[in-house]
Length: 96
Image (cartoon, rainbow, N blue to C red):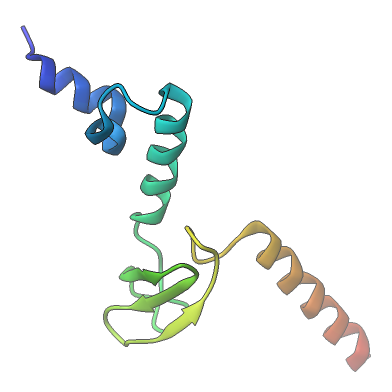
């Protein structure tokens, strides 16, 4: 039989530190955000999967020390990717 602490950690993930406070939905959303924030992301400069978050929207590669801006919780947001695609398309059409 598993102990209470094992069940608590497995179900609540990183938000288990809050216990029963703040409500289930808030703790779940926080755990989802923290999971994305601490995941491994590839560096756009060297390709190494060692990008870490320095602050809100500031990301740095641990290998090549390349610092760049991105989203608050993930290096590339969906809005940023859409803007990048439209810039590439407009620059291609300007060249033609």
